[in-house]
Image 1 (tube, rainbow, N blue to C red):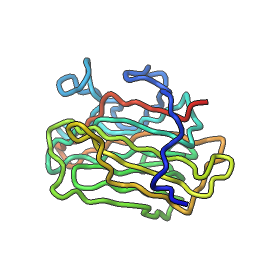
Image 2 (cartoon, one colour; image 1 turned 60 degrees about the horizontal axis):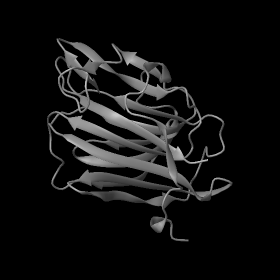
Image 3 (cartoon, rainbow, N blue to C red; image 1 turned 30 degrees about the vertical axis):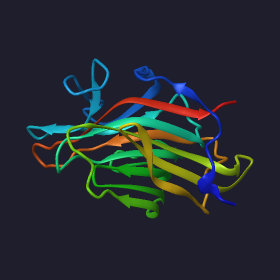
Image 4 (spheres, one colour; image 1 turned 30 degrees about the horizontal axis):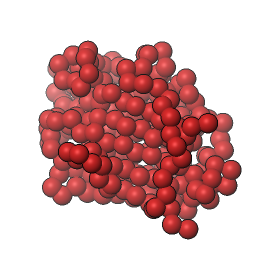
Length: 223
């Protein structure tokens, strides 16, 4: 078995960029918040921040597709400063997140910022790191960074012995892989609920910069 050489099953689009707001469940403070200045495609990007002590942050859960055990996302992130906010994508969420936490109590999740990318799983209160990579040098600030991440069952969804994952960043004219491997622990594959969602936070007590995302694309195995 050499899962590092595998590719995800042929994928097809689930939703297109600039999806309907009705597809999503928003959970958070003053959320969703849209940036009308910095975006890839008009009119806005989704952005966390704090202004004059008023925070804007939260979760966006894809509620109209509650069972996505195998998934590929292509997204664009914008980190504003050396205190850029927390950005997470989470997968196979077994319920909506509790507002005080950064993700559901049971899920896999990806933490990505300009310094590091980490793939983890959690069964609250315990969490395990599956893979991690520190960028050296760090990724550029104040620019859009395109990335993609995928998880799929190996050898098949009907026999999910391993969870295979891959995280890549688009660099000029090609994708570069920074996380690429498999986990012997593969859970929730057969669950009837497997939410995908994002969490955007900001760093700072009074005025804090955050993180923006735009033009999210979600793909699933073709049927």
